[in-house]
Image (tube, rainbow over all chains, first blue to last red; front, side, top):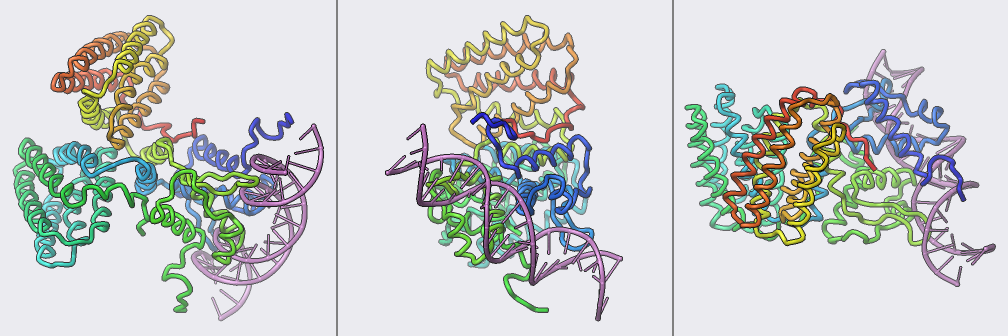
Length: 255
Length: 255
DNA sequence: TAGTATTTGTACGTATGTATA
DNA sequence: TTATACATACGTACAAATACT
């Protein structure tokens, strides 16, 4: 007992390496793209085995702080953690909480309105064309019976386009996160329901009127329309996919 | 060429194992505490090497989905990822984005009001006592010159207490996340500013009036007060800690 | 208190795949 | 095309931690 080899509660060596590398990144101010010591050097530096170093690098890779490349000039490089990593972690957390569609919309009603308001005055003609194309795509898919998921993706794409011009990374992240959540919900309820048609029509109606309000740069109209749109969407969504929400939040690392 | 051994873009085997295990957790509805196949079994199942399985388990461990234990009855167990893991990932992401105090408050003004509204009617007498104690603690610390961080923690604790009774895990998470962000911001700006006194007084004023509104279960008053409180707080905070926000978000695994 | 079985954690050596030059 | 540098994967042996007797 009372061996103080490394620390009171002898932590795993790989975790020690992870912390060291994190420290390097912070104190040396390493930027994305900077190269880290290669496997061989870390092995010699810590006098440990290959597997140990690999475990440490794997941990950093999961956190999104480094990426690994093979071949010459390969190795570990500092990376900028993407939104997907944060989204994955948040989904992991929510998977074990009780979360239903109503609660998702409780937040969505807030952030979508805010993001839309922030987009007023920031949209270029190119953006308008994209938004129009999105609406037309929904129009087109709407007539098919099978493209459930495609339709949902196209509908949500309208909102993602708006979020992309939002200068607030927190709001932007939340909108994308929620929309990804809603996109994956449709997979669970494969059954085609007639209410889905009305839902699609309502969406197109609101998207068109929102586009008008954006063109007029009428922020109060945008806020009002988006709020209505969200309340309407909540009504349809909770009716369609209400109780199944609690599953499948576990992110399946799309692409 | 044209070898289709595993997939077009030959993914790493350990990632494949990670996905499989995640799938097991979802489709078999595994709960925290449930045991996963042990190392040896996974090795035989996938016909791979020990290091490969260990890499996969390490990844899951970092995501907080499993914990590893040694000895008999040891192995990999399903775990419930805490909010800290999601918060850490989100911080890692925001570390590389441009985020200022104003943008934090853009979201905070929304969620704090919503959380407060959700708390109406859910507060027990025990909660009221905790909230009162929180206010009194702020009162007490407010007179000391050094307890900058302690004061901030105590102030934010009032809001965290409210969030704890919020039944919506998404809103609850966001409030806690934002408050942790604000708590850590005070460390960067060590300089004591006279404006801080007025800030503290305002906070106590609003907390007291909020408590009254909660006791009266007057939701519209709660919403109005919390909104005012947030606008006031934003004014003080951005004045005090405006531009320094962008540094040191990288989470250092606090315990 | 000690011993033993079980299972992870670490070390080492080797072979293979893959991207750069 | 060939050589090179590096990650990726395999297999074995041993150390360390824990539960049970």
